[in-house]
Length: 269
Image (cartoon, rainbow, N blue to C red; front, side, top):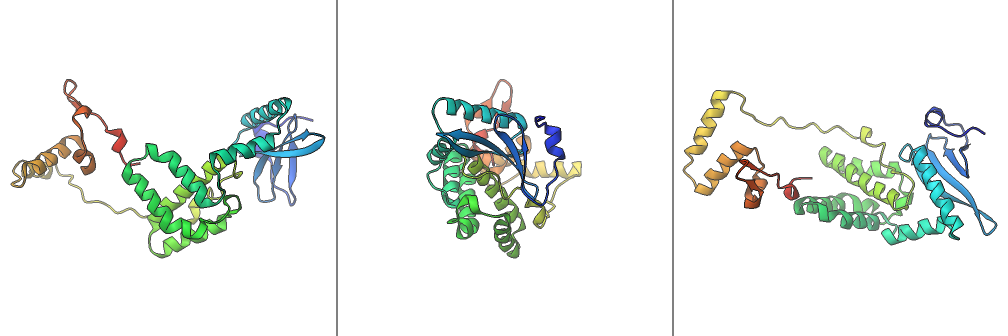
């Protein structure tokens, strides 16, 4: 039987029933009537036939699926059960299976690279919009329709941008769940097109060079505190955000090169 190729996989169309397309060494692709394509590895341990999920295509490519199959075969050769090992790894990475438990594990894993303000925003959006609806549900059983219903409630408040942001956060949490072996795919991945597009506001801007000059002159002649005047002048020279200016450190300034570093740890994420 001919092995699978990426082109063959891409050309596979769903049928009315679940279908299997075999590769080699126990690896096959299971295609659902809705078009989902799932990698499976069939093996035997202690004379019992077992099955372990290896992810979804195209998130997991054919090459990656074969590598995962080979890893499973090595585990079997060492006297281990791949399915039990996968379960143990998932439990070690995230002891709980509810959406909130997985979300908290993801958040704890990410907060060391987030700014304090970004971490606070994530916590608040989850607590206000997501946990009351999905928090206690088993993450592997959450359906796209449930996520969309939650997002529709946010849109009903007129918070269209928040709905987009919340969907993005949920997607990251689901993908974390996939990575640690708690579910096979991200159920939120196809929902972005279902949301009302957020129309950003056109911010006021000076485009006339003469008016820019007048603004700079006003900054120089500012009669308030010297710190505020210096901050205004600094912003015009560096185009930094107010928060970046307020928290700037001397260590970020290269006097020889006459430039300031990014202060990356405080940038918005």
